[in-house]
Image (cartoon, rainbow, N blue to C red; front, side):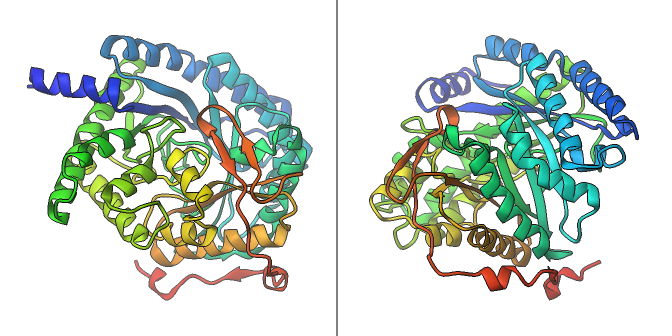
Length: 454
């Protein structure tokens, strides 16, 4: 039974501490849409998405109204389009027609993003997958709601350096193709190592081939709630600190579980997972960096930051796992620069660098996220950054990713405004020394020795 104290506590979290359900994401399998005729593929894809997700937004709004829980986004993830379009798409331009179809379907049902314009190439690329990757700049520049992701490595297979090199080039081309909007296309493009099949968060969501035909995944978020809870134990020992984070994560996740169950029941779609990630927003008091400061750091990036983040991530998972029937996705703490006011402040103060962010990704959920860099950064440097991040994921058996934005026409110290949840960011300096000869070698970095487990 839920008592009145718990009801009042939850209301306070929502009204004063920025608690929200960040997204309800409906996963839709498009494997039954595969056809050798491109027009047929586009017709089938549009019809299936619109049919399955027609009530997603309205049901989300009903739950918001009835329970008073903000559900910020309603989204869709689909089977990686490189697989769906492989039989019909013979060129990058063919794949762009599918991107436009996804965009039209997303607008028809009213979701804010649709993810799955994706290719999984951790060991090698088929011609179709290479065509999809080469289509990304055009696809993201001519659509509004499509998100793209490419998985270039895994612990089991190693890192596909041909794909890494190509992604460095595609990120730069995407930046150029969307330079009129401060290279915003790159904010909808993620490069992964060990990408999960059930991630509800954009831009990296896709519906894995091992998933059911239709599924509901929910991402919760409550950095402000955790920050407020930690204020009450300021100066206390680590045991007290950890217990407080665990208990708070449990409460936050219970809200997500309630929303997931209701959405699943009303849409008659199976519940998949709750993603436990602490996802910040540009709103004041909704920051992961401010949690780190409350733990005892002057700024995110100060000595001790990686240890504090590791502690936070672990306790969020320990508390959240007990509150849900199934957890998955990324689950932990996001550290995007542009979407977190505390991170932005730390960069502006000189406390947080690209190298420190890379170290922090060893223990957090995602990786280098929403980082703006100078527009003249070379494709090989971008590829080197991707390779470094993929290596962390491969060796540590965890998901890592890069969402980096070379802002054409802007340099270090300038500010770039993305708007909405994407926020704004100072452009960060990048190591000036070249890795071109390294990236140009081609081939694959082999899997680490501990990958050989069966």
